Length: 262
Image (cartoon, rainbow, N blue to C red; front, top):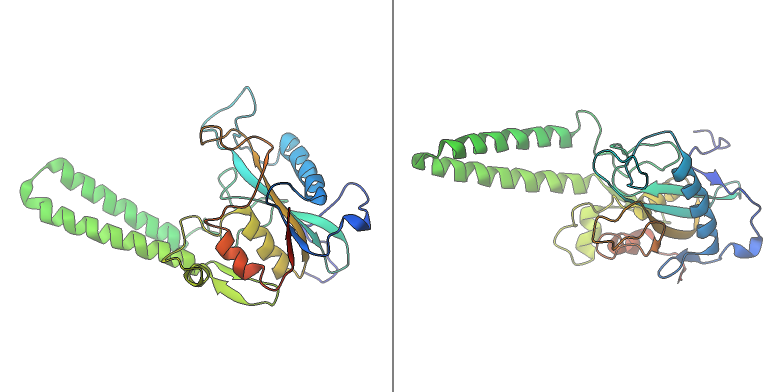
């Protein structure tokens, strides 16, 4: 992308931003969002409520079809290389069955790429599951050792595939240092990263900002849609970034940055 080109994921604010609202320290939300994050979230929520670019069942209308899947969204207020202040948007996991959508920063690593190692690995797992099920349905005692061997192979293959996924996620920090998820979580005292690490909105946002030389100013996340966990998540409410998956990543990505928590 040419240096002066408009970044497709950088969204300007709809109103003039007062200079005093731009924090000198990076604002990370704990209990309440930074005022600029509130403004960014209102703009993003207006888009979510009215967009026709994709179809996702958040469970917010009277005409819901298929499984209801609420989603965590994030906004990162940034200053770009030309000095303009705006924001980046991201969602956790997949949205409408895809990792790639207009207006939202791309994933750190796209697991859904056609013919990727993950797709090939999952196809192999499917074949193994089918063979194990077939042998179990035959219910022949002499086949039990073979079934046990196949199950051990399946477990080993699944673990290796997950480890390979973690090695494909690499995160930058302000100094341009890059570390894989495996290294980040090992440094934080984990044996392995938890499943889904690196797929939350916040790490996606910081990764994109550092890749494109944008200065992060403030970060916040909110829930959009029905809650899947006994109403723990409330539609439109803001939440601090998760400790299990995000905090170890922050120790690397936010190294060297002065942080204030709200």
